[in-house]
Image (cartoon, rainbow, N blue to C red):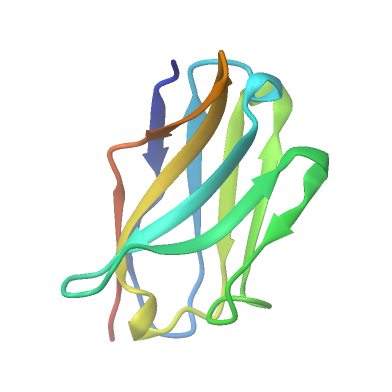
Length: 119
């Protein structure tokens, strides 16, 4: 199991930047994949960025070139740097971890952090 705690959300103007942080209660070396998802009102949950084993990174087209996922192994922390934010980026952002436990991949979620993009 793992506990994930996000922070860094807030209100930002269009074109601005935010950096989200996700602190893991266990070493991220033991986590198969970590990523960020977002959920806006009336919309389905959407993958924003995912970093898998071997440092493979996936971004959807909607954020590619603007968002960057990175990690600090020593701090067991994964970051999401968000630049050139748009109103449509407003959502609750969730940290996600996939851990191989036994023969199963289990998913864990943080509590979410709100990002509001508005002038």
